[in-house]
Image (cartoon, rainbow, N blue to C red):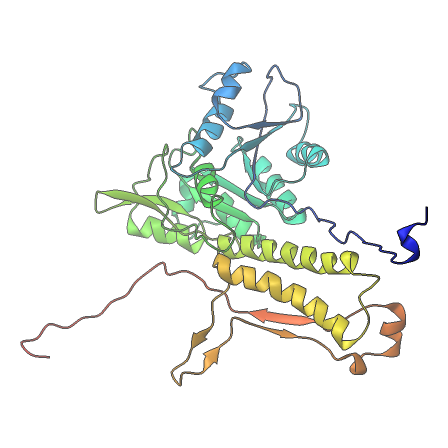
Length: 357
């Protein structure tokens, strides 16, 4: 029997390769423990799983994990890294990351200053987001520069955030805050004005709050005797935490989209205007998602009703690219600029009362 291939020969390529990216909503808590499971890394969806493994409910590790799950909205799971007593924080985190590096948020059970400084350095070098808290009253003194918030600020760390809590030795407000904030897409949240469950608010004077704010530390305070919310939401270097998280997400999203175009192209992405536009379209797709997620501002109008774009992408024309770059098959001078949506934290309102308008 003759084969139909003689008449019609069909070849279908599968240009559907998926590219895995890390989650920006997974939290790792590092602490020492001697649980029945000797694994370097555990994943729990309920703090009582730790009790079943032999951990006491009074153990700081249990309290830290329970705080993550106590929030009105919280992460679905918590990674628990095991630090051996003979290890440094850096060694332990490196070992955990070697086993599983998909997590993004980092917190410690330890409040030791040396441990905190090592964790902050690790986060900065490994694109993680580290949170900690301190009960050191020197944080409440604007002129003092020896507290942990001042030390992290002096190092200009963009991936570490500090909270002041007068009960930081027994509570973990920063873990509660991270767990709640991680329920939002990157760019859709602010870490300021957040209500927390299972942690105590700190009774601070205005001067003490201002001292913390000067050091870019976050506080958890009660207002009007009726509600308690966080104040601050910045990393040690002064940028908003949500901006750092959104930036990290956007970098990954652009990388994944452009890589997908390159490896799933039919044959190749040509070094032509059309091929360059394919790269631009991949970037545009990431930026459009950033708009819908709330990190990038939507198109708006100025006072003259002219559109203010959400972002601008600059692509070179093939004719203007050097022969050397084309020979090396490297595309350069692709740029974009986007407007952050930001968030309103303070409202200053002015009104007027009169007998006529």
